[in-house]
Figure 1 (cartoon, rainbow, N blue to C red):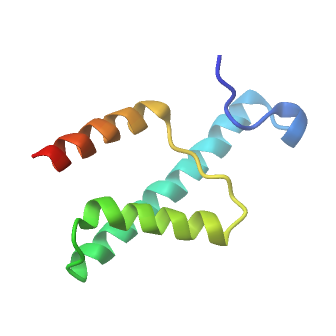
Figure 2 (cartoon, rainbow, N blue to C red):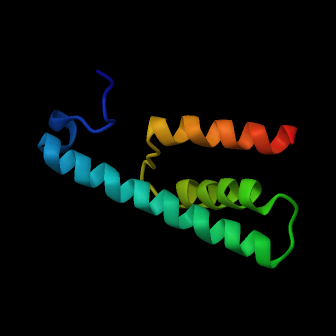
Length: 88
């Protein structure tokens, strides 16, 4: 089983609290991605829904000490979507 990135001994959290903590970090990524996509769309920057979320997440991760989380299942679905969009 893959580690959730948040060990009990490291943070003193139970497994349930770790899931909630990771979900909060996921929501930060999702919110930043949506804001980045919308801003890039408003300013007519090329491929806004690919570059906007990438840049916004980069800014959030480099300006905070929060370790961001994105579930593996969503990552795989996103890679398929991005690949289809680029090839099309």
